[in-house]
Length: 221
Image 1 (cartoon, rainbow, N blue to C red):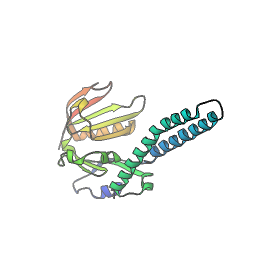
Image 2 (image 1 turned 180 degrees about the vertical axis):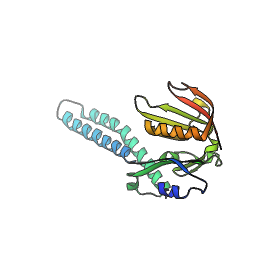
Image 3 (image 1 turned 30 degrees about the horizontal axis):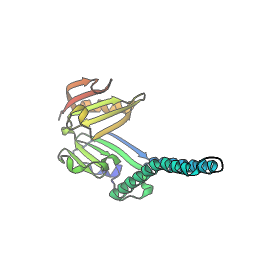
Image 4 (image 1 turned 30 degrees about the vertical axis):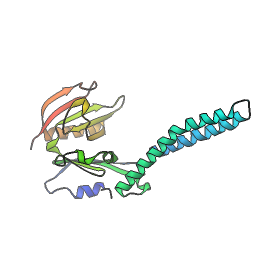
């Protein structure tokens, strides 16, 4: 069973203190439902078109072939998504309805970054050094000492900020495992806390996109 926000907090080590936390509930079935509605709409509209055109001077067989071709892509996408959802449920020992209010959270302590997200189910945990990052189903735990770079960028035409944490930093080629998506207020609070935890060795700006920043950091304690 997937761990809850309260369970993770109750299991913190005695020398850990919570510095920042974020918890949100998401309907993880929303995307699947949208694809399903799109599929029903396309098939329904196509069948209506078929019946209308079959009563007038159109090649009904050709129209039927077009309908099938139009329906194949959303149908395939729906089944791929459905299979992915079933795999996630099996891994987490959850029921389908549990994804309607799926809990995602982040807990930053003076020692570790602890984050829960379905994203971690996609990762191969064996590829990562367990001394630096531990991935348990949908939960990732990283020692703050092992973070090398904090990379931040602002969302395009939005007030959302994306904060990535790198254990190894290779700029464009290296994908971060940890990502926080924050509104401006939370972003400013988090960055202020992080700057008290780390000494900044070097700063870079406009690296990958205009307005982004990379802080090369080292844990103070």
